[in-house]
Image (spheres, rainbow, N blue to C red):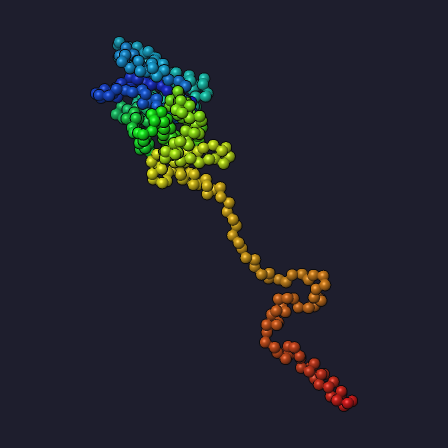
Length: 337
């Protein structure tokens, strides 16, 4: 789930978003929402629920983003509609019938969707919430696996450097999309940025992307050119022989980043450590006698060394009894002569 691409289903409670935009000068921008969500995976379903007769100005941009508009007429007596229950029914239908959808996005701040979030989590789905800060319930926010505030979308990233204006326009566009995709992967806590993973993210953000259109034969040439411009740093995987982005953007200026730390850790683990040279200790016992060696009963080598190191003593080498016998033999020889 963390390394593979997710399959997302987006459900938008548009009337709740409209309440959050009351009194604001800006309008709801669906492109900012989709640009952030495509970074998490492939979007396979997009539905928005509202009484579109009240929000006719938003139907065109939503339709251009390939979002299915579900018409829920407003009731005349109570003033409410059945958008909430219809959204829950469609979400549960996809959860049971489409097993490949593993992530559900609820674009709303209404606390009434908390039971839906709990049920989806019970089915093993990853639930992401998205809403306005002022109109989002704490109950819904805390119940989701992840929650994104609309106000945080579209802010200038801190890691993206300013591109050189002297570069051709086609290269600047390719490099800008490349850095945005790298930053998106870093936000999703991707530790190792494989070149294939980077390209898939670029195509999700811009489906019409093709490196040949920007003047490169392969995607590897695009990465190599970006490295020459000082935008990123590449390393080659030893097994697959493919490129891995270790650092990019502001990480290049700081000299260290999370990508550099991962690369350094991999280098250290790949080095072979030589065992330290240990001196052999002297044997504590004498080796067994070899064929043709010292006769039986002779002192061992360590004992002979110890005996030779002693101070000579007549009692040791010539006992007193042997000295008397030798004196008697000498006197007998002298008498014969």
